[in-house]
Amino acid sequence: MSFVRDAAWFSRTGTRHGDMNQDTGVVDFLTDSTGAIVAWVGAVFDGHGILGETAAASAANALRQCCLASPPKDKHDFRLDVRSLQKEPQAMMNKLFQVLQDAVVQAHTRPPSEVEYSDGDGVMQLKLTRRGSKLFYCTGNERFPVDFGCTAVVAVVLQASRLLIVGNAGDASAFVCESAPGQGLPHDLRLNLVSRKHNPSNPQEQQRVARQCGRKVEFLEDGYMSPRRGDMAATMINLTRSLGHVRLQQYGMSYQPDIHVETLTDAAVAVLLCSDGITDDLTGTDIAGAVHSADNAHNVGERLAELAHQRCQSPSDIDDCTVALLSFQRKRTRVSCL
Image (cartoon, rainbow, N blue to C red; front, side):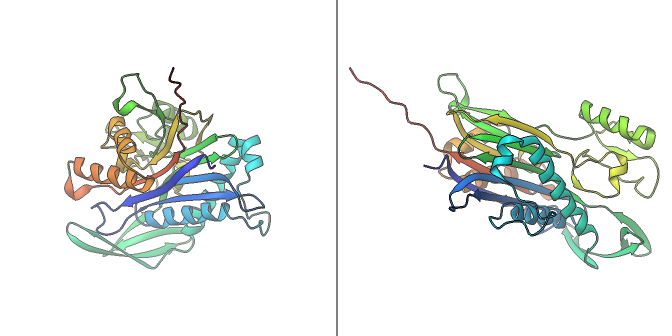
């Protein structure tokens, strides 16, 4: 019997860019030579900025490629391998994020000539131009830099060992939901956060960026950071790690993930991956409640996205909301009646 009972991802478009959703998700699996499922893979990619949706789609496509059962075509064609994941989980997750980063960077080299976004004031059409290797968008006679990317949280669960490997770069979150009866917790569920957000307000990230960049970056009181010079100087940055962002890498932006590894116990109910559109407006109790009440993985994501939209205080500025969920078989407890 498969350890994973149900798996799905769900995304709901916000109101920031009309009907444009810059998030995407992935739920996939790895198989052995007989076709049996040996691992499950889930991910959420949250694009941001001009062409953020391109970054998210590029990362998702690259991840799906890494899950294919067909052998690699060459040394550059990476595949997730269960034996290597079991033996060297951190090295494999780091390699995977390098592959995802390469895919988003490659997308910078073949942008469209024009993009269109909607907001509360109507439709905005932007022409994209290049000067050397740098990309810009133009409005009238003004030109602004384009340097797009996406946050990434990826989880792999190995079927035989129940090993969980989570990689995260950005402000998405990963949770392990566990059954905890008799402990006074809402819905008898414990929600364990197994990732941390990478933003300028995080003291560890501030120290890392300061060591790497010195005075090239200014940390602002409102939780943002900004390059002090160059054509990115007017850019307000609320992330310190993300895939992509070719030009912001010199200002401390890193695609290197934080990695969490644990062996899931019989108490594990689900692994959830959530974009910040979910976690910015919902509590752990909200998330546990959706896991408790929904009858399948898709409905968990749908309920959380609906609730996050309802909670948002700015109807015209609702973020895209995305959830990927792997739910597990619950072990039945034997009760002896004497």
